[in-house]
Figure 1: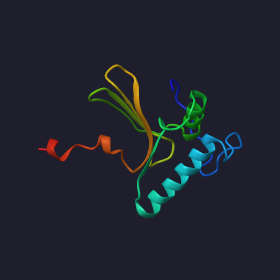
Figure 2: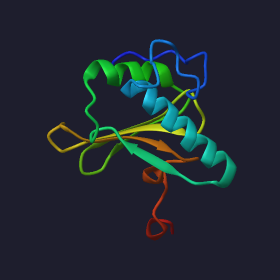
Figure 3: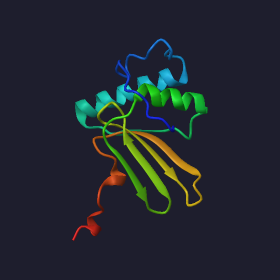
Length: 126
């Protein structure tokens, strides 16, 4: 994902024709929309583990384009690098973790007001 994706013109629940509901990307967009609705209605957070899915690079790129990029990005350097960015949809975050050698060790879509990895640990607050 070297280039920034453009913000989509439709919400994730209205998957474009390029992503039929039976496709992996269409299914993910529908799942994200359902989780986002639950977050808005009752505060229930969710996450989708992308590394556990049979997703190729083309599908990953298509999902990134469909979700777009929002205004917030963060990088962490703790036991490896982590990249976190808000998608074009408030409450939908893309979170990637890399091992000390730079290999991708975790990739998730988190549906939450704020990713927990960015919060200060209570023990660290003096």
